[in-house]
Length: 150
Image 1 (tube, rainbow, N blue to C red):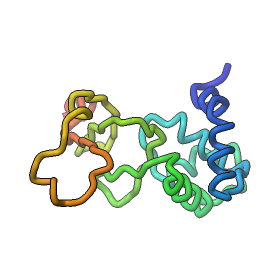
Image 2 (cartoon, rainbow, N blue to C red; image 1 turned 45 degrees about the horizontal axis):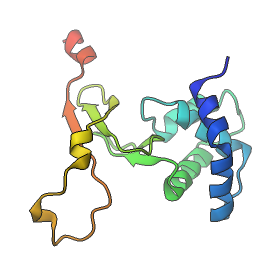
Image 3 (spheres, one colour; image 1 turned 30 degrees about the horizontal axis):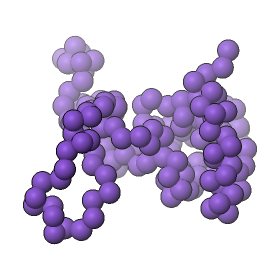
């Protein structure tokens, strides 16, 4: 049985290969495994979490390789960095417009869609600021799991 990440990787492999060729980046086995892990991740993992998940399949991979690869993926637009409530960067492979619910207790991050917000124009106060390229909403609160635990 193939996982969702394997299906997405298969569907995106040609696109990824072309992107890497265009950027002059070598598509290594390590980079493919890290990208495959990111495609299957729903929890916006940190580099350390990606390393922990990939290492059983690739025992020789280093944490530094994971950090550098995620930085590279961010640079070429394959992942985005999610700022949460702690010092660790978290990463997201979903590049289509979406927003985040962040639990201030357990630090979980959940995606949600808000099409009405996506269609809104920025407020007038932002007019002279410069060029806005995207909008992103982050709602913070306490998730239902943390509320149940008291």
